[in-house]
Length: 399
Ligand code: GLU
Image 1 (cartoon, rainbow, N blue to C red):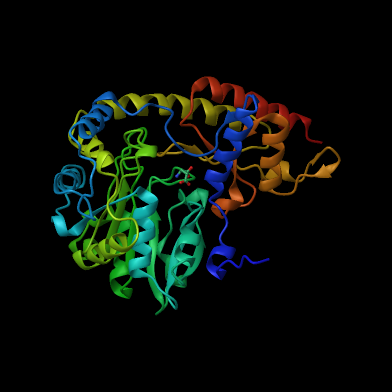
Image 2: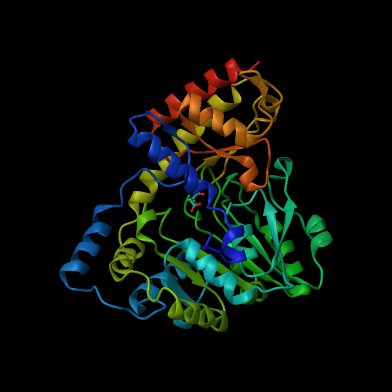
């Protein structure tokens, strides 16, 4: 063939969450009625006042290049958010706006990691962290966390993996895929370890506003100035304001890192979309009641979905404290047979569910946890009811 990809590109596979999303859409286009628990995105529409701000931006011809790292009013709205929600003070030069939360993380990793570095990623992890770290030449170091410890990494375990090459740890809470959160005590221990051993804390707080019951989110950066110094927070408007397609992420951290991320943007994407930036200002500064409406619905769906999943014989499920994912344990089912062959893996189970039971889920192995499945409950109750019924039928048909 005349085509020869770079090693980097040839080793890269598509994001499994987005791949399932694409597959789901393909089947739906063929007229197949799929119950989709695939990619995590709120089924709510972007609130009207946010859409209106974008329409106004277009009509006002706010459609040209903006500063590469985002416009000042949006940076100020982000600064206000951190002050108000987390009691954190940032200056404009410590904030950068990027083209979605993934772009924020990608640029951040490119700015701080390189060959020879090790980056600790607690598992279960979000699918794109390891490939994004690998793309910098650094090595992902996967560290298991456990359900009976609320999927929080402990400093005792962490200590065993920290060495002179450790450059950072990626925390994500509320977490995708398990919905775990972190308490201040644990964050204190992790922060101290980062200070003692001089590594960065990458805190992905994109699900900050989506917590249930009595939990309130605590940003690790807010606990100690020494933690803040080495913490970079990645965040965005996608999950909070049902704005996944608008692609606006933001990052807060040291001005030197933020500047380096700006240089990367300057040579690659340039500014995030001008219109989306205006929409994001409306989202952050405008009325916040849409969040409560969404949360209320997510909580009902969570309670229903978890209740149904654990009613299936052999299935257990951690009760998520935040985000909008259920991560049930299907290990007891994997040894069974379907159409004469042993199911064996979460990937195979996912295929069976999609092809024969028209239900889209993401295999746990993609999140570093074989035997589990991830189901997004940011979808309608009707779809959840239908999907749960199909999963029950599937499990009942396994021998
Ligand atoms: N973060 C969402 C998910 O995990 C969206 C898809 C993606 O970017 O991976 O489903």
